[in-house]
Image (cartoon, rainbow, N blue to C red; front, side, top):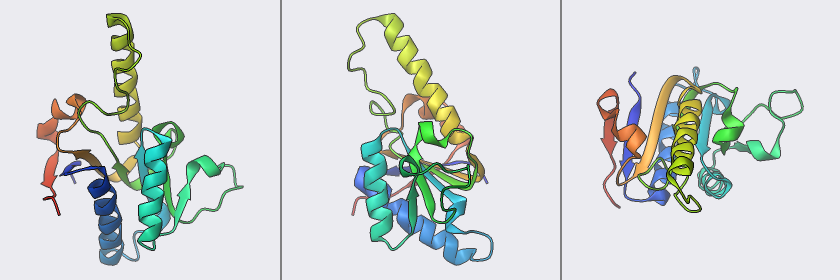
Length: 168
């Protein structure tokens, strides 16, 4: 399956769509997809917390990776794994959702960038984090954005199946 670019009206719509899509995928594939097969990642902890809130409110069990030491045997292994892209490094999931990959917002804004060299470094770090997030997906990748995708995604848009979610 090609990666999917999901374009929504706003960040709230992104999170609601992810909750609905996880429920739909699980219903369609109950033997093949456990909640722990899903990873939901964002650039910032505030976005992670918002995603946990929406997923939990949709009666989907979650595990916030900032609250665990997943992978060393101490953490529970059930629930949708939700975390920042930094926490995603080294993990693999059947299905991955990357939230907020929008133009001008992901994963860094230009705040505090005072010169061209710093901007270049920030853009390289953004590309690196996007690569880390995208390569966590084994079977399916969904990249979500509000209105317009980040330029890194837009440049390769022909490699994505695009799904537009109309405003509610």
